[in-house]
Image (cartoon, rainbow, N blue to C red; front, side):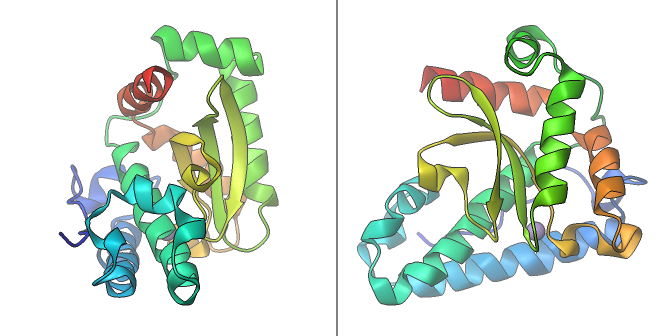
Length: 203
Ligand code: MN3
């Protein structure tokens, strides 16, 4: 079963004014679609074609060398964007509550301290990549990855991630990545993040 681009659970314009509809359309229908097409081409006919994307990414060092870079970039791209669409939504923003809110305060000091760390990791990522909140097996942590590398490749479970490739923000924000990051928090779907947190902790 080949991988496919998941449908968005909301319209392209649902995240405006923070993320514009044209950016969402190109990002989902062109960029994510290209990762999926290239991933499927790389693993077609191999034992990896019928595995979950998580299994593929945790096994990246076992992928045949001539396919490994393509799987790393495009498999990571598929997993990263799938999470990205899921943890955003039109009624987003605010602050996490419940056990996730408590865990964030315990780990980072406060929600605004978490935001500062995620933003800082995103701003400092040179070139293209992602800033993440992950479950590392024992607790929460902030990290960034280059290109389309996924925390899953390091055995960590992403529960929130923000794409800092220019294609994620350039139409509205041009070179102003910090402005994009500041606005992005307004579209975070904390129910979705909390669900990933619960799954990661109990996994
Ligand atoms: Mn992207």
